[in-house]
Length: 223
Image 1 (cartoon, rainbow, N blue to C red):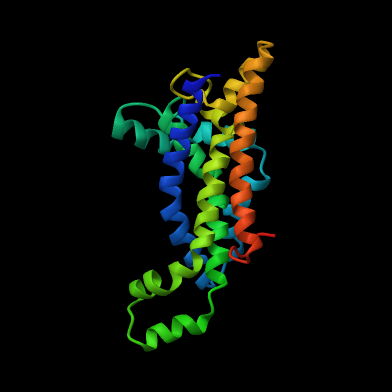
Image 2 (spheres, rainbow, N blue to C red):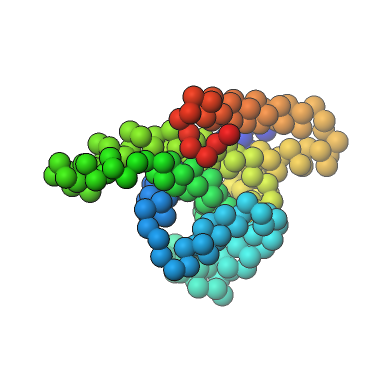
């Protein structure tokens, strides 16, 4: 068992989820309540990582993070180091790759909030912020939990995007999914099997939690 790789995967998942959850809350709510020209293309861009091969997305991120590109230049000027083949690079790549998992469950949850509840809150004199905290969030929290679980678990199991952007540097970018691949290549079936089983258990428990909530009718959009 490569515990260093597993720890790195947990750190990557924690950073990704911690950054994406508030962003998913804001963007999901905005998409749920606003109609505007081009909204379909915005939603398509968010959902694109679901259908785009990870190696394709990873390639474009690898190019975008180069020092001769605006994103890479900005990061290099800010920190003095590059994004490619670094932990910061795989965090940023993971954020892009997990956008639909963080935004879509939250958006569907906000869409299920009856409009008359919000209108009643406004008529009662509640501010938009108070309406969000006192009325909306208690109703959409299962969607937020779903977004958190799906984003965290999906990040732990990432392979293609992380490998393209970060490579397989021990202690820096080599996650548990990459470690499993390396062990298979080395014909170390015992280690590969142990790490695979660990990911299987984590994923099964997490998805069971999501579908358990959905079975009680608490997570909109999950069957």
